[in-house]
Image (cartoon, rainbow, N blue to C red; front, side, top):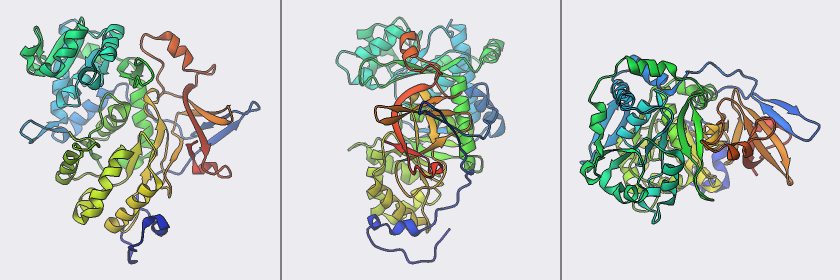
Length: 478
């Protein structure tokens, strides 16, 4: 789309971008049912039925391995700086081999497999291989091991959740933490394996092909099986383990596909640094790529000084069609795009939409992004966000229409109910649906506290209508 009008050189904060159209994007009509109760509560529902969804995440992996076996699923730079590609077929084969090794060595659903390192190809393969045979994967923030002096949080994770296997990319880096914590677990590593006595090379997990035991265990997985245990941030204490069932993850990806049907039209391609121990990338980004047969370029950069240069290098090398990130990353990216029109065209030229989460996007930054997209595309690339948490899949309410302003978090997705409850002069939002976690791992007390008497999850966020006279404009944070 190219608007023939000359593009103003004025400051976008003057509002000139709002007169420009949006780039085309296949989106559904907004749908909302409202139940108003006598006690002041309001329940919101999307009347569109939730479509059938797979039993488990690896159903998507196996489907894509059969349909597009040679397409790159994941790509990561090696130590020499070259991209190493993992195809869908190779990912399935390696995951099956890992499943075989885990079952053959006595691992089962009673104890999780913990992953202490940053994102990597082996991280992905181990996680998929564990989950598909009913063994929970538990990604743990590397900071708990590498930036802590007392290792309290990683010790808590090991003592409370008792992983039977712990994976680290580099045994030498994680040796101090593991020696301090002394977990009763098998240690598996990719590099410097000899640094930890008794550690097993990751390649050993790939040595044997999968047998009938893998298929039996795969078939025994249900929607209620625990796929992942994602740890809360622990910012106010020791982290809790959020139970992410297969149903939570699979229904969430289906909900996303229903409100963002354009994902079915073109395989998504992203370049992403976000950690797989956090729900944003662990479930939303990773599972979206897997569900819709896309490609995930793994960015070793981060939106902090001294690390964002790697992100800029990666974005110059790969051509993305979706950009999903936190507000801080946009704050660093936008000046680089404004300074280099060719780079802006490379990043935004094929972008279907821009997504932000984790924190609000300042309106001034939003307006600058609109101006950039108009200069590149002759129209505004839609920007959207959602509201959710580790306990909600993560998206619960999601924006699925173009907006002029930052902060609109959207409306409920199919299959989800949102309760608006009066709370101390504000309105608290709560959620119930198949994409909501059933509770916290081995913590019935905290589980009971997290839900109200109707089974709605208490996320703790306050919301308000963007326009009380027109609920179809959606909700925003309050």
